[in-house]
Image (cartoon, rainbow, N blue to C red; front, side, top):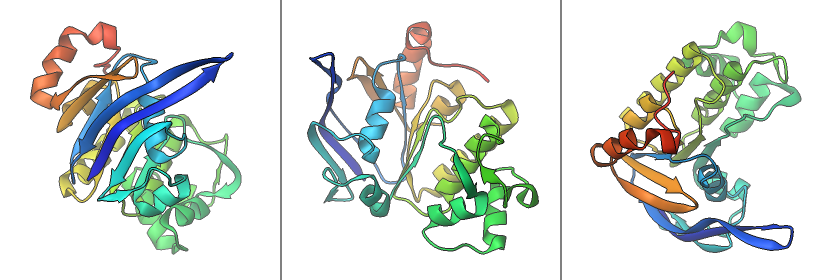
Length: 240
């Protein structure tokens, strides 16, 4: 279970301090899928980075399964059981797909294991296992590959920042299948930051972030109708 208590993150812009995340509190239960949505620039991606330790919180606490991980850096949080997929996956010139998957798994993977992971996200293993993770891969290929890296290791919590961004319909369908599989197993908690209606429809609960605050949080059946009414304002309920 993830517990977030009074989390605050500030930036200094030209000598002026501004809060991006403003003392928010919520939890994510074991096996639960929480979808975070809301207007662009509201603080959703920043919140995800603070949870992962990519950005350091100014105030508040982050507790994972009773363990206070607030002071942990990104590597220690990964070791504690948090997986993270970027909105724009990073590329690594000179690193092969096989090496990347092995690093994600925390051990040297056999070729057969790599092939199974790649196949699970719709990538032909023979074509990709020895390719470099560089600019020759499309956005959709990178998204699928990053999902494979997250699946390479069991996590307590997986965070996906706008997984639908910049991908084609086929890649999006593959991602949905993987989310359904992870969620159906109820072995890992999921936080998905998304504007996409099909992803929002999968949620157990929905949290709306607006101007660094929680505008609403609750069961899907309770929150989704309000998003339908405010879809234009929140830039959510996009359709692929």
